[in-house]
Picture 1 (cartoon, one colour):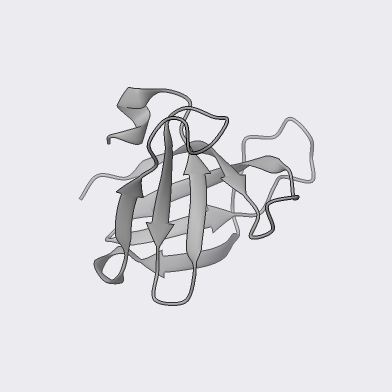
Picture 2 (picture 1 turned 135 degrees about the vertical axis):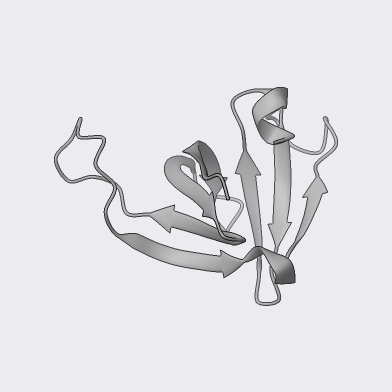
Amino acid sequence: QDEIQGYLWKHGNNRLQPWRRRYFAIRNNQFFRYKPSEAGGSKERTQAVSSLDLMLCTVKLVPEGETDRRFCFLLISPRRAYMLQAETENLRDL
């Protein structure tokens, strides 16, 4: 099965927290978030800090106007919801 990987913007649980750019990958129906590289410009991402089983999650598109950003979606797991933003509509709809 193919792997999809790249950066998304992630919003914290608290609406006052800023959006942060994070590296994610989807592999074998698992959604992984990787720790930011401490080497600055290094593209190496070796340690996933969290994973979700996508078979247990729901994805909901966030209508434009509900947030000040475009191409947003919610990834809803049994434990919490994650507000994420793709850089383009095509990337959001993968």
